Length: 458
Image (cartoon, rainbow, N blue to C red; front, side, top):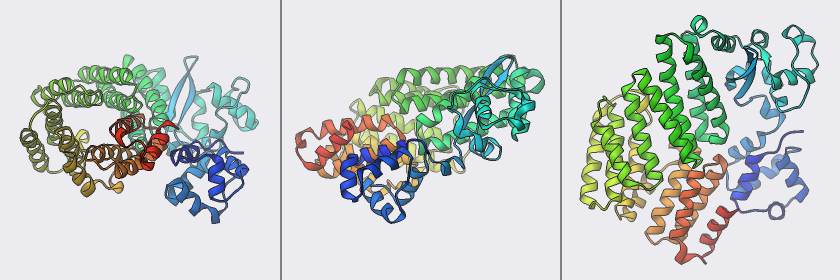
């Protein structure tokens, strides 16, 4: 029996369908719908195209949701936190998909949550029952067991936890960077609920090792830790836990300063300015973005372009004229145009597509929502963004449509955004959509507007 398919449940709710209503529309037995969502069975192939249409998702996305919580899905397991005994206490060692899939753990991950007696010695691994193996995974296993599981690289990391001065080397820092890069990739498709625990696990290990590492290794660890802490701040921001977000941004700044990474310090200030935008605090945005642009660091031109755009947005929120905002945006576009090839991983994300999205936001803040809509319609393409980010920009487009006096199209766009927010558990997107519903209040009785409001309340 599989586990409950939460993604499938969220997709149904995002489509504003009860199990009973979905069963009637397919048509199917309501008991079948419950079985599909609980992971006990799957819809037959001839039903899947219609099911995808009713859920307003692609057939490929439906197949992805059906794999969740099933034995087939577990053949390609997600990242896990593996308890390893270090100095007599369990430490959560993060393992990525590839590492898990290539080891015997790929067959054992389904049982991580089972209750069982304490772990047994490594020497008995081969003769253990499946129940005892599950216990070992749940309660922790000796470091020496890792090679037997086919995960020797993880053993080296665990050894570094025991003795950083002896075992800490580039293998360990590469391991952490690879883990964080994977979580960043997965975040846009899976959302913070999946990636945050893993990210925090990596940061905890980095913190432990850095305390006793040599000065050179400590700098390398803190540099990676700073990037990871900034990412954790972003994940909390997407969950709308703003105090936690600011805590991790502050931690990222502390580690960047300790590592002597000036570029990272400017980058973190830029991210704090974005948090200020989420909280609709333009004066703080302006202070931070000006500090980013004038500070004692040499930022890649792509990040300078992003900071110039952020400054334009803050000034628009504070009542600057459209001409003033456009002049600042021209600076951002020139900086981006002069940037050339990607100079730094920190600026790799910023391109013309993203600057177009941010320019559209500036137009709306400057009181030109119709111009914003035209830019969204021209440049907002699903293929250019992760599922979560595309849903977020749809929510901003919906707001611009509502402010332009197009309630039906705003509501339809908002519904498409709500569906993606449900898939990725993006509370940030849902909060933007609640603002859209507020703008649409004069049209609250229109069917599409009512459907959007009900989708957000479900």
